[in-house]
Image (tube, rainbow, N blue to C red):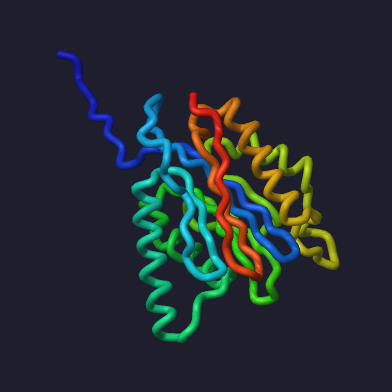
Length: 223
């Protein structure tokens, strides 16, 4: 009898794509709502975006069970912070907390690929992009997930930010207006949906600015 090998994995990849763009006084975070495994669509209406604080929003792709576990940890630690400091975390502080939380689990990582967006203490848009074990960077724009290999080259072409090695350091915010950034995100997803089977159904867009948070939706192709 041939030797059989168990091939179980604690991880899955549920697909999906996230994009974030930071502007002078706004931040746009967007993700599709499709959740799949292999060639099966589990649901067409699953939000990948969570508001962690007044001015911090996270979008996550990867293994959605790990993403949900990560979100619960961040919510609990933010609640403790609020009780201790009597204020909400700033977006850069939340970025560091997310990095620490991911790095703490580096030997059995959360299989989640995150972008964190929001406004910093000066009211400027900020985007932080992560790998699965907490390495992060503040950037002007970023994409994560199954469609990121299609979207990032397009964003680089449209928004190429100055090299972080240039001195004096330049701001990592994009020159677009808020409405132009939203239109660009819609174009990104309409394009990626044509080629990536794990991206589609509906696009959820969150816009953060001084007035607060605004949500928009756009239908994507469903096949």
